[in-house]
Length: 270
Ligand SMILES: [Zn+2]
Image (cartoon, rainbow, N blue to C red; front, side, top):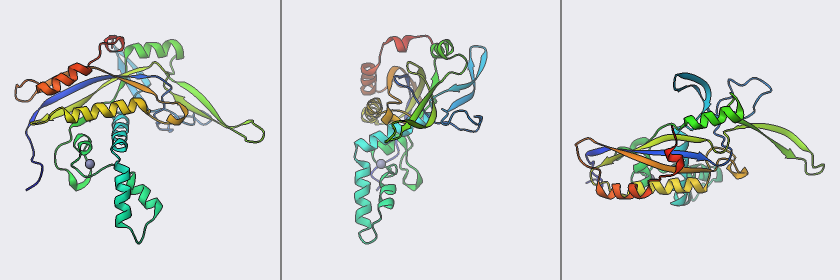
């Protein structure tokens, strides 16, 4: 007998968030479209973005995959998954232990298929035991944010940060690098859809919330050790869609009503 049995789907819970950028954010994009002598490190952008009746081009956004990957990796760190995997490798390779292989193995995502993290985010390979609960949307800038970019940045929508390596002897700056960033006070909106199955309690959704809190303590994108990518994640609203005309499970509704914010960031025009 398997220790987990597939449960029927009850409904879709759409969790609506707004991400407030507190310090310059750099989520790396492709260098393809950048001319020589330009930026060394561009941010990821949408080729086209519809705003009212206008089509804007090269608009920065936050990919759902970046958010999902970061939240998952922080939850795994908090649950000591890499430590456990390192120990497992050590035990299985007593005779032929190799540091690089151990680190590579320990740093991979959990693939047990049973823990809360695998149940929320999924697992590759043949250990899948139930459908993935979470789906992350892309996060797009709000209308107010695009107005702010136009006001302070013109039609470029980003800032350029120059960083140098200091020569230890002469104290002069060497090898300047130009990194593109989304400016502080930008706001991105999107949602995380949670597929609720029969008997799902509040535990899984509390794990997601814990991951979001960890993200706020850590950073999003690159160069977090240099102050980039601090964010605040605002939980603004939720919608329940039942596949069987049932109400949202009471236990889940309670935690969501408790988390829901009514801050200006949530109520501002989209
Ligand atoms: Zn797992």
